[in-house]
Image (cartoon, rainbow over all chains, first blue to last red; front, side, top):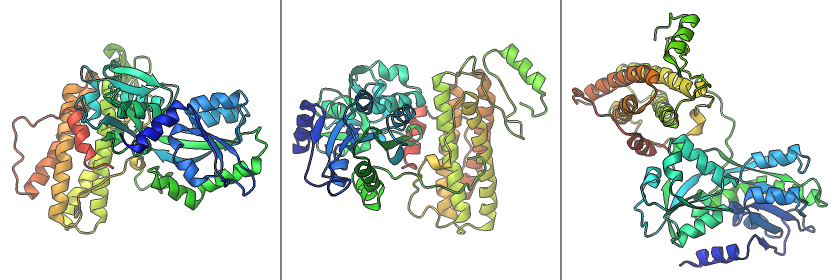
Length: 257
Length: 200
C-alpha cells in the first residue's frame, strides 16, 4: 500500500481534516478558514498553505455554513450549492474557478475485470459511489442516466459514501470492485487504482464555484484567497493537480451548434 | 416525414400514434420531438446523445479537413457536402433531445483528437473520414435496431442511408469496395468505445 494511500486513510479516519500552516493564502497577516470540497484536499493547501482548511462533501460543508460554522470561504464541487447559499444571503456572489472530469477507478488487481462503464452492469460487480446529495454522487447518477444505464448499474451499488475520497479509499483497499471519482482524486493514489475513462459524450459538466461567507469577519483576506485561486499561479497549480481550466468564450463557427 | 405535412396533420398523427409527438424539425422535413407527457425511454435518449456526439465528431473533422487547405478540389467538394449533411443530421438528432427537454451537446462540449498527420493529404483525410463514417453508419444501424420508440426509427434509418453514401464514396477514394449485403450494426458500447479514440 502506498504512502499516499495511507495518508488518505489517516485523513479519513480523522474525519474532516483541518490543517493549518504558517503563511496566509489571503493576506500576509490574516489566516482564514476555508470550507472546501474533498476533491480540493491536495490542491488548495498547495495554492495557499497558510490557511485552515476543512474538507468534506460539498453538501456537508454547505450545511455547516448554513448552521453557522465559522468559515470564511466556501468552495464547492458544483455551482448549485454556492448559488443556493447566495440566494439565502449566506455567501457573497460565487465565482467559478475550475472544472473536473469523472473517471472510474478499479483496484489494481481489477477482480471484476472492468474495462468500461458498461461492465459496471455485469452481474456480481460491487460498485461504490458517493451519495446523491454529494456533487460527485449526483454527477455519477447523471452519467448513468446519460448512458441509459441507471437501473442496471445501480443494482450493483454496495455502498454510498459521504465524499469522493471515501469512495477512492474503499476502491483502493479492494472493498469495492469499482467507483466513480474525479480524475484529480484518482491521480492521488496512482499505485493503488487503475483509471478507466468515462466516455466524453456522457461526461457531466463539473464546474467548481466558491464564495466569501457573508458572516466572515475576514472579508478582505477571504477575497484575497479567492483572488489567489483565480490568479495565473493559482490556475497553474490547479492544472498541475489535473483540474481543467474554465472554458474560454468561443466564437460560434457553425450556426446552431 | 414530408415537410409538407401540416401542423394539424402532425398532431393528428400524434394522437393516433400515442406517445411520440412528431414536429417539423428543419426545412428539409426531418423531424423529431417528443411529448413531455410520455417521455422517451432512457435507452433511446442515450442513443440520441451518442448519435449527437458522433455527428459532432464528423462536423469537427470535416470542418478541420476543409480548413486545412491540404485537400484537392474534387475531394474538397465532397467533404463540404458531407459536412453539410452531418450538420443536418446533428440538428435532426439533437431535436430528439430538445423535444424531451434536454440540451444536446454542442461543439465546445467535446475535445477531439485525431491521428497525427490526419489532415496532411487527400489520402490521410479520406482514411480517417472513412473510419469515422464507418462508425457513424454502424451507430445508426445499431440505433435502428436498438431504439425502442418506433416513431424515431424512420429518421435514424434515413440518416444511416446518408452515412452509407459517405462510406461508399470514401471507400472508392481509398480503392476499397463498400458493397455489403448487410452492413454491420454496432452496439451502443462499440460506438462509445470507437468514439473514445477520437475524443479527449
